[in-house]
Length: 403
Image 1: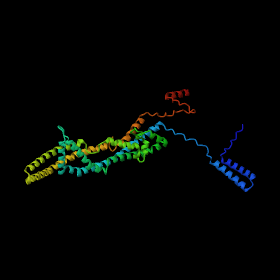
Image 2 (image 1 turned 90 degrees about the horizontal axis):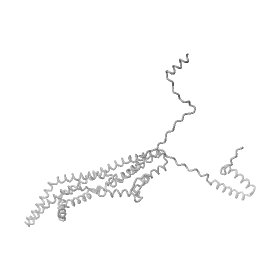
Image 3 (image 1 turned 90 degrees about the vertical axis):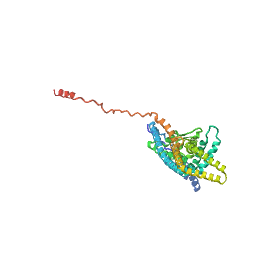
Image 4 (image 1 turned 180 degrees about the vertical axis):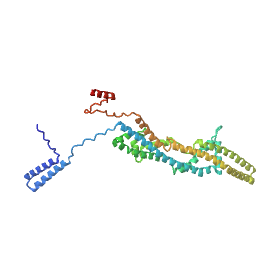
């Protein structure tokens, strides 16, 4: 049976040219005038352009590339390694900035707070405050030391921490550490799909399934790893704003000044000393009032002068005790800001990395079904391999051949 001749496609250029030539010949016969030829030529051009503008067959959609479970396991492992690697430089930068903050706080305390607290007139003013506190106390209560400790914390914050924070703020350090971690993580994630030949759209979907911030409800307080690494700038993402507020709320008074445990001994010693000084100055005032006149003024001035001289003698000891307490309080404050995973300067990094660790650790712990290795199939042309005969059997065959 003769083969059927394939009919040429209507969109084939050769077919179109042939049809155009036939139409042109027909036009010459039908339209002899120039006007008729021009009209026919225009109609032909319009039809030809319409045919050219018609799109060809819609291309078949590209099939989705299959990525094995083993490959996804390696991808998740690399994401986890990238998170851990990004944590190290972010932590180093935060520690360097916090060391600078600590040094400035120490210098500010030496230059401002210690001279202010141990000054003669400050002690006189504090003696009056302690007396006022004691007057308002009930029986069996001693709120003077507690109220003095609160007052010293407030002064330390106003005189030391707030001026230093205008130059180096732990909250700004926390935000910078989080931004650096996210930036480094994003840079390392870009190389993973190329490393394993994973299509970018499938890799992006994988990142969307990994939680990075989990503070819902509301749902806007959650964010995937894809949203975090693609947020520009980072602090505009609602989940990041919620995370910052959450850390600040958890911190409460952390970073606001020396703890009660560190400042209370200072306040207690100061309260006892000030009460004793107030009693001494009160006795001198009573004697001056009893004598009266010029003699009374001389007694008051003498008592004040004696009190100032005695204060200067006691001042080095006061400064040493206060310095010891403030140094210990600063150490506590620095370790809290640097090491506390919930409220410190690395709190944002810890939240993000812990979310990734929790999700990816579950994935990596699941067993991966490896594809079975291909079985060996012997070639049909090869004869089966036989074992070689031993030396004794070979010798017996030779002897039989000679006989």
